[in-house]
Image 1 (cartoon, helix red, strand yellow):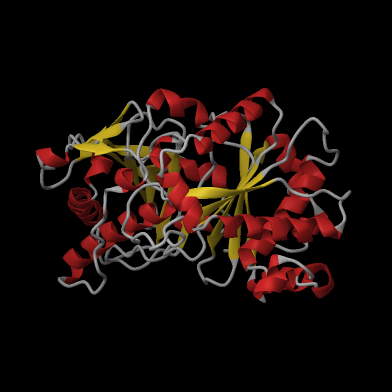
Image 2 (tube, one colour; image 1 turned 90 degrees about the vertical axis):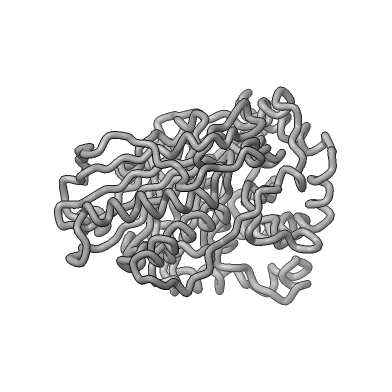
Length: 442
């Protein structure tokens, strides 16, 4: 359904409850922050009707706890300067409240990703110099949604959940008087680990945001759907000599889903492959556990890089899928301590590769598909004092050909959020092989 909202509290700025010390005023971006895309990462947390608290009480608690959380995560309340650093000036986080002219159940029964962007106060590519934006949405039934956009320039998925769940724990503590969940003490020294480069060198490495006529659809795969795919892809004959045979492990559920959706994407969007184009695939990888010794979970920033593959093609045969899985897994294994160590050095090779890739994409020589997974992250832990969310959604992204994975509320299924051009999606969502494996329930 089409969502109608009415702004009831115009944008205000929520500032840290304690001023940021002068010695922390200058927060340097790391190299990995500098090459991150200038977009907001969207999350919308939906909470059921509550008779315990009024909208005003909810609002007051959210603002007070946000102010305290910003004291710990002070760069989010500052302003990014020239893709080099954050001026931690406590200028504050834009905060908006709206009334949604429908019931919460009307939204989450059949979510329309494109409509969920209305629950976040800014366009996702309108990040400007901001670190964080928040919108609180009150439904007619007294249900509520908290819409959050965190700049990818400052944070990856792990950092995003570190902040949100700390913020929620602060609010929960204030309601209950005690809180058994530990608060994160974030570390803001990623620039020491991944030293920044001259901004003029990295600006061409960031893939441009082309805000085309993009639509997002959500496809839900149950545990049995995913098991069926994994069983199909665990063919012992085809696995001979692969990384899976060597490690004795079958493809993970996310790798199996990635292979399946990649195969359908190529069959539908690129049924005829242009010999003058390349069709790379990227899969985001968290670097924290790949370093030696491992980097702390509390390290804030963009501590991730994509595994990159150029898939093997064989005229749509099943061998394509098996080769794809093997290539992706091998590429992920190559993101190891040596890879992280090279990133930490002032090695220009990585930057040159990024610039070359960006040039090829701009010239139209590259048809890129990107995967990113939020599965296994603590997506449903954000309890602000009125219970955990009944559902967490995302929104329509500002770039085509991106597939994001999120756990279902039950935890045993996976939601695939697919961002494509309108004309490509019209064919993709009608694909019989795709529809045979998924449904749209929450």
